[in-house]
Image 1 (spheres, rainbow, N blue to C red):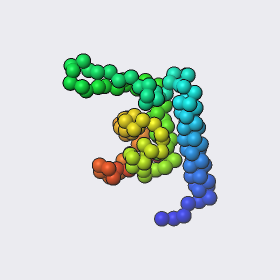
Image 2: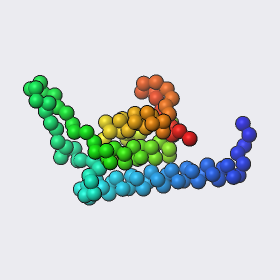
Image 3: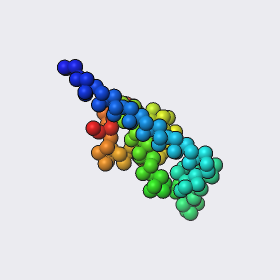
Image 4: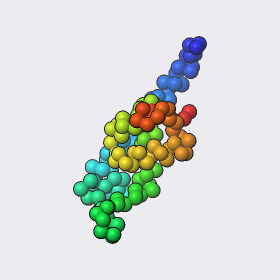
Length: 133
């Protein structure tokens, strides 16, 4: 493998810096939304205020309301930026790194894979994810 030219090295470095900045900005916005009580279209309900609905048949099962499409899209961008900045992580590591609801992160990863924005390597719990170039 031949060494990268100075230009290629600089472009790679700039892409990494930009990915990091995008992730930091997205995370800061998400934290600000959560800490301010979610004034501009709440991005994530606090666990204590989450509404749980019974399915009405008396068997004790509950369902959680679906995420708002705007919340889902922003969450997908947070997950994508995190994976771009940290390629090769497993689902558990991504869930821990983005500080979002674990079920939402799982759905975001599945949606990003379906859209072709993420690619996976491995099987089951050993599956790692990278952003498609």
